[in-house]
Length: 181
Image 1 (tube, rainbow, N blue to C red):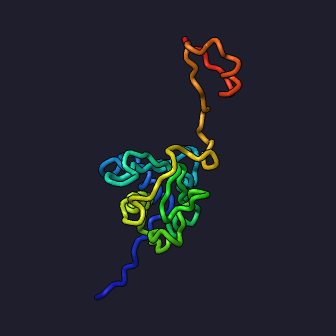
Image 2: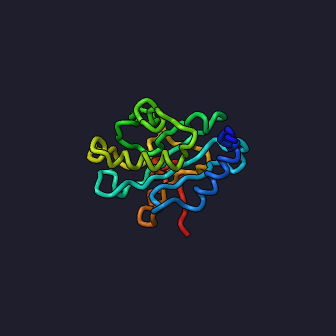
Image 3: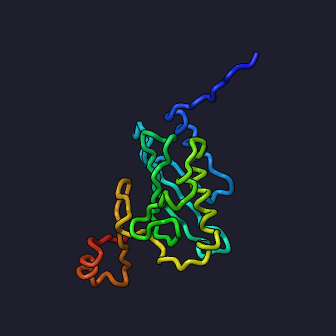
C-alpha cells in the first residue's frame, strides 16, 4: 500500500534555533560566521554575519561585516542582507550595501532549505568569481551611513602623553579626551 508522505515543515523558531546553534559552533574553515544581534529578540530577526575575504582576490585579508534580517516569513522568504563594511561587488548596491536579490541568484531563487550560512558562503564564493575577484575595493572600514549603532559602545581616540600639552585642540577634534594611567 502506497502512502503519500508530505515533508515535515520545521517551524520558524525551531529552524532559527538550529541555525543559531550551528553559527555558535563555527562553520567550516572559520572564514564565515554568524550569530544573533540581540539575545532578547524573541523573534530572532536581527543577525550579524562575518566573511573573511577569500585568498588570491582583492578581498584577501579583509573582514566584512553584514547584517541579515529574517522577517516573520523566514525561511519561506529570504532574509534581507546588507554589508556594513564597504565592498565593491556586482550584486551589492554601492550606496546602501544591500545585496540585491534580483542580482544575487541565491536570493532571487530562494528555497526554504537555504540558510544564512548558505548565503554567507555563497557571497564568499561570489567574491572569488571572475567579475568580482579583481574589482577595485573602497578603503577598509565601515561607511558611517551603514553603521548599526545598536551594541556600539563608543568611538574613541587615544591620546599619547607626547601630545598631552595640546589637550584642548585634540579633545575638540576627537570629541573627548582620555587620560592615560
